[in-house]
Length: 261
Length: 261
DNA sequence: TGGCGTTTTAAACGTATGTTTGAATTGTCA
DNA sequence: TGACAATTCAAACATACGTTTAAAACGCCA
Image (cartoon, rainbow over all chains, first blue to last red; front, side):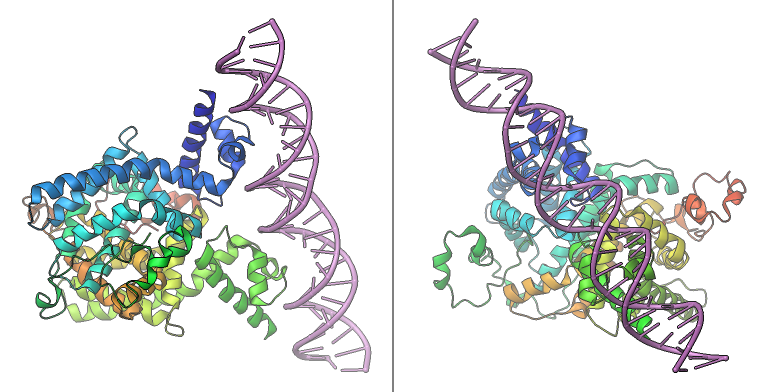
């Protein structure tokens, strides 16, 4: 009882403070003070500040990745061989993210800000942690996305995917200050759902821009192979299945766009 | 001679280290060690760590904003009343940024990473500094961008502009690790110019996606008024022209999309 | 060359951080 | 209730930080 409360208050306070100031700028004393618990309880319950950071991410990503996996399965069932539709895929991801933080609506942009910090601030341990924990589900989404954009070369798709990621993370993570600006400049209040509503058409249109390569249809009908050599780069971290590297060692480039976590 | 060297080495080392680890994670001892100078020289030449951070930004932004201003003037001359073209505007900005860091090609993505940090990490002083120093030029670019996208409502344009900003900052700031990933997955080397070449069509297509509002042409032919109440939000910082606030105090919302710095 | 302002240097200062410790408190089950 | 494990607590630990200081080294012009 008391343990659950302390752990939860710590995660809550850490999530807010990290998103406001960043990881290094937030001290354990800041966190424990806001949580109303003793300073030492962080090291007692989590072991270290690093582990606390990872736990903050896990609290959001565990339900999200599970729900995304379920939603993708459901959608794939309705497809019956037809290829996925881009706008629907984006909407699925957005809906899943939004429902995963339904208890408090502003939780989504807090998490987006954290995700942005995971990229911009050092925190290499976080990137490795995220890929090891949730890489599979994201790869699955990535595969569907490939099939929904058959007109693109793998290189184009790779880059446009990261353009999408950047636009999403930046606008959603800064949604508080941006909506404040929008309210001030345009006289119209807007919230996260409004932004997502604006975002998806923008992203879809960007993705569907014509390929710069002349005949991109012929060279790219086989975008299926995705999750083959997944654990290659993170093999020094996951340590299992590392001995299988020589099996597909002859396959130089797997020609797939992978999520950058 | 020695002074110029010390200052320059400090800026060089700080630029690299800040972009690698972030501001708070980079200590003055890290910087002075890499620069090969004494620890105290930071406070001697710059006064404080904050001022050093601002100086790092100024070293890039001063030539950039000056060159962007010149390029915009030149382009406006060729327009002769016609409205600006979106792709050309984006190319102008990209070219200017690239030429401003022509001495070392990887300087652009280093700076993009710094710009991203300026948003994500606390550093409120930096945002105020940037807006006070370079707000005018960015507002000018913003005005041209408005005229190049007349089919959008002000709200749509506001959000799509920030979608562009996020996609650009994220992909260019992470261009090192992303190109490494692209090389590994796709077997093709690419650099900053390649990414920009992919980026501009994506952004242009996203911006030119149809407006979700039915008749957006009639309500939005007058997107000209931009730089009127510029200093309102930063008046507590710039402190000059603060008494003029009552002049246009009656104008509630100026209906313009402003750059978020 | 001698003197003086500028710059560099090593050392120290005060403060804040993450972590550890051992005693005090709490909750639980025999 | 009483004993035992889990949890909380105040205090201290070692370390790293930004900044300051005063002396040493340097550069330059009379």
